[in-house]
Image (cartoon, rainbow, N blue to C red; front, side):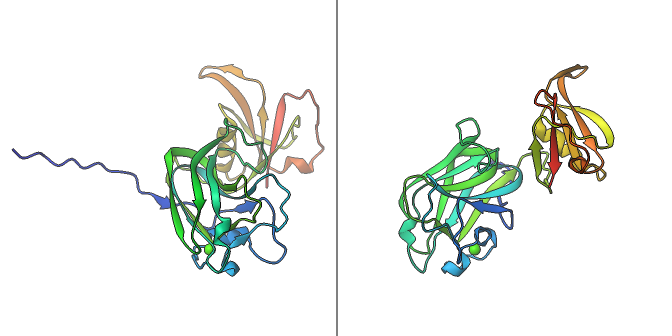
Length: 253
Ligand SMILES: [Ca+2]
């Protein structure tokens, strides 16, 4: 008896970290820019790697990439420094988050552990980290939680699939709490999340910033929040700051 073959089409995994914005816990004054880690060059000499400060006073040493959109992260490839000091990349975590971990406290609500790597990585070696399960997020961080050594990494590749519908944010939006900017309102829409409000703005060529209501409003589609698309940088206008305000302002940067 012949068993028919079954083909399962899996979504293609691509490196979504290439040339995306990066940051790290501290910066060495002489070398080691964080963007070296996503430049597509896997040279393992320090000149092409990153390096946090020698006396990093932070409780952790970390490097992070902003994928600029939400993805489902499956695998992370990390290339260690090869000219020296490979032992520094040891006992590290790879974390995936929906929020910028440089701005918010790391909690179990906004961060998921992709993988804990026990032990060190050989000089110049590339280690493949498979998340325990695919994780949805925008920020991927490599963290030394216990070591006091500087963090050196030469290349990171984040293999992921798009979260449909894929939409790439081309700007950052920074929230000013209790602030409603008096810009020209192009239109007011009703949304379910901050992300939906900002994404709606990004898709409108005339939109530069948004006001987002804090309270829910009953609409025909259920409870929603009002989102005002503004046509110019309202922050340059007269500020309206009120600790009891019902709105927050998200300025595009
Ligand atoms: Ca590199």
